[in-house]
Amino acid sequence: MAALVPTDKQLLPVEPTAHIEPAIAVEYIGFWTRFIAAIIDAIVVWFLISILNFFISLLMVSLVGSLLYYWLFTGLKGQTPGKMLVGIKVVNTQGDRPGLASAALREIPGKIISAIVFCLGFLWIAWDMQKQGWHDKLAATYVLKVETRR
Image (tube, rainbow, N blue to C red; front, side, top):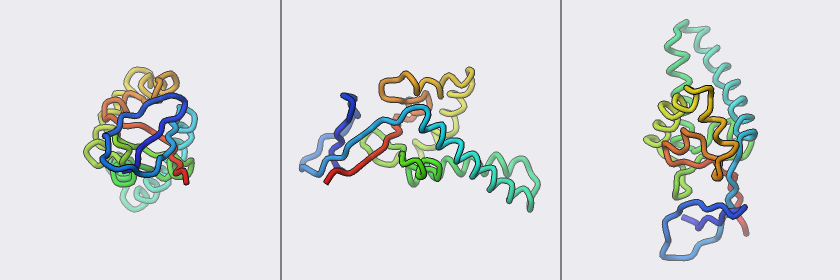
């Protein structure tokens, strides 16, 4: 795991390593970039669910399909297609993809909690020092733009 070098004097908690590896620049990603990624993902999910509903007209397919989309992409890749397009990634405190357990916590109860009070948990990203929404805080995740320095 490479050492993370935070920008804008913000710190990302990392585990100390026994050997030195190349530094990676870290930039916490704010509300608007994440909002654009969310719109892209909503369009992709709507398209996929529309295709599924064409063949199987069930409300449950829509709900389960949406949950699986966000949970699996975030847990396995750290990125949904929307996040890939805008060049951002969800990471845990070590800078790795969050994994399925953290992604489930972040994407299901975390986003419900973030949305429940007038979406305040999502708006929290705009003024939080590390640009974390309530769902990020719950799952100990960060959304970053990562560039490798050479």
